[in-house]
Image (cartoon, rainbow, N blue to C red; front, side, top):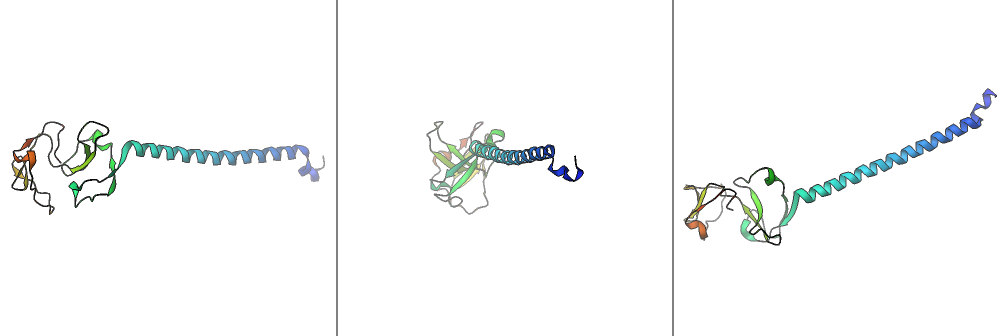
Length: 158
């Protein structure tokens, strides 16, 4: 074989063609790998969003001026599986166990083990005036809380 014509040898051409095919296959596999990874991340993100969060629209004026009727926000559905609501938390709850029950929004005021009473427009927790450091109007209709409500384990007042 002539050393000057080694580039033209059939074995070298065959090897070069095989390497180019492998390189093209490697590029295609790399692109497909990226597409697969992106799809898996998107699917995981969507499933996590569905499982952990819920979109809620305010339908009642009970939380004005903090939340306005028609305002939308996301609720963390998982946080109270690992902890309990604290005073001041804004929660979304159903008044009955039915899946069709309406969602209500409220700020937690009374915690389990406390007695909550509304007297002369003020909220009393265990006999002491509760002050939210906000300028909310006085409560004109105390309802059941006019006589005081003692909360059991797992019960809250909003």
